[in-house]
Image (tube, rainbow, N blue to C red; front, side, top):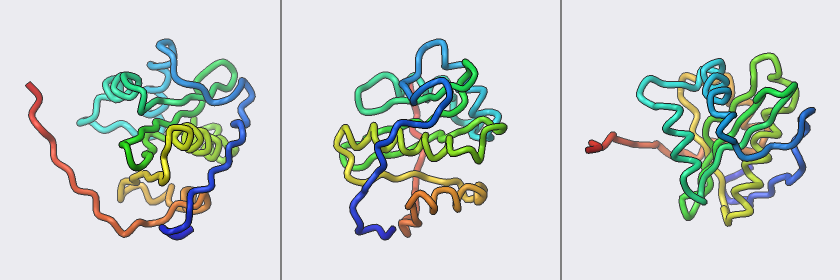
Length: 156
């Protein structure tokens, strides 16, 4: 998919034994953090509990989860910046990877973002995480030939 083609997400329900992707609840938070840890998504400079709290604090972001056997099995954080939708923390329990649950997580997050007006959806992949590039390419995501720059700001 080129950068000029319109977004055409599949709005199907996620194929999860215990149900569809839903917004995270208070009781899910520790399981989601553990899932992110198991999937290697935690970084020392990002507090995952704070990331979840921030995503839940407003109407333009959320964390979606799916359960299998009563436990959180997958997640996707979605946020709308007013112009684009962004995906973060797409994770599937290691024992369930390759089952379609990752695709379902992306589809659910895309649907959430499109329902809130997103016209384009983007995500960032760490340069060290090349193993997931094929997964995202199969879902229609491609290199946007953009360099992401950032800096930390002091919080008082």
